[in-house]
Image 1 (cartoon, rainbow, N blue to C red):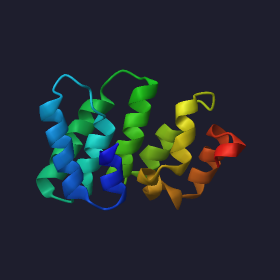
Image 2: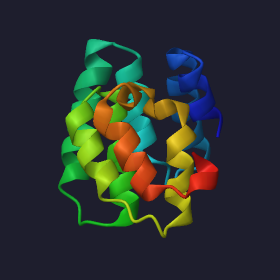
Image 3: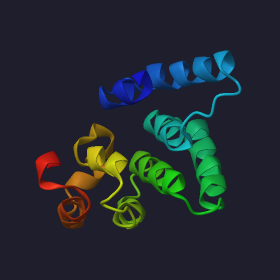
Image 4: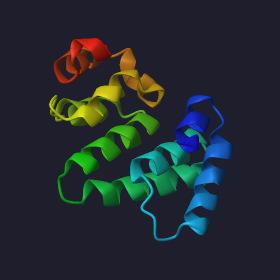
Length: 130
């Protein structure tokens, strides 16, 4: 959970380094590809942006699942692809409790100013979470 916190606080370099260390220490653990893409994109380094795009292309080619949808939401937030991110957000089922926290996740701030964001969040989130 430190990676999203670092990113939300604007510490992109620290987030990227923490992600690198985590992958070295836990090579068999599946870490969030969406967060990794967001982390790479947030550094604004051209080589990191290329790697983020490569990882995004791979993620987009995988089979559809709830996990992939959430990963893509974070990836598109990092790459500031608002329209694509909102399309993925709209796919979420309001009955899935994991989606409710997206309404307050600071990593989705790039989407908040878009008029569709509030409508989608209202549809997928119970009133007590908004």
